[in-house]
Length: 218
Image (cartoon, rainbow, N blue to C red; front, side, top):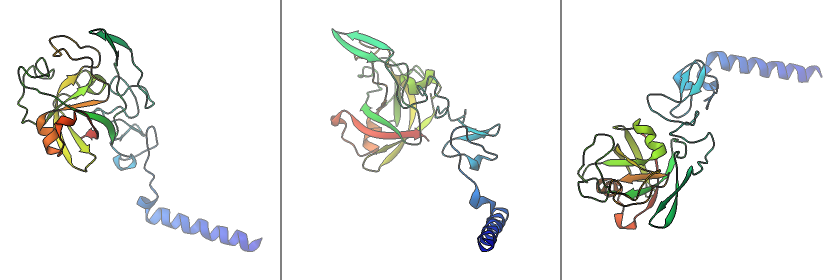
């Protein structure tokens, strides 16, 4: 018994010495609501606010708090109703899946120029854009009432190629089938609608129509 106690005491002393001498080796990386003292204590894009890891308001993520841009606290985002478009019914969404460091999305292709299949001018600046620009529209939930206008996101394709693009428009998940939306039905809630330049930068064939990607704030 004396030997076991002695070994335990030695182990305790060693752990104490390591903790005092090398505190950075014992620092835990905290997730949402986890304890923190410095920015390095929080994982990913989270920052330390009043002693707890939380979303960075400057980045605009909703990893911890959900909200209009991130849906509920879970990965699920349920339809908020339906929309009838030329006799066909489509689900409508006011939310999108939570934004993370690897947010799964469907990349679609949009013509942001005047007279293109994007319909009206971009929501963020009221202007039309050249398709040679690295720009995107985000589903209503991710667009978050325009809070991401002008911000850069990083898109990664399954082939490993990445590109940064600027948010200029909303891919409306609530309305559609009118002139403003070029007659198209409501957008799904997990869409990154990219210009020709985005597709080219990712080495993708836009004729595919829809491609699975991941994205995050840049």
